Image (cartoon, rainbow, N blue to C red; front, side):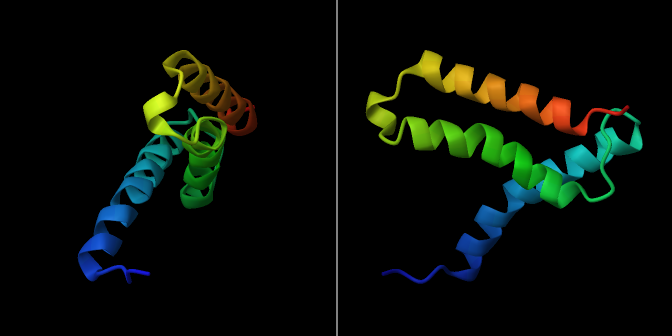
Length: 85
């Protein structure tokens, strides 16, 4: 098993933090309802990317339309959960 290096840690942490920053921006603009953008970013990722990979675990044989639909459904679920009321 390979141990992650500092470079690997930085590369894998940048995308979730960037997403959390965007969610914080949308929350600050009154478009999303969250006081804690990092867990909201984790929820978005789980509802979209993680579900798409779970349902289509082999990228070479993944059906692009199924991946797109899974991610769109996840984005809709996220908006229903985090939309301002």
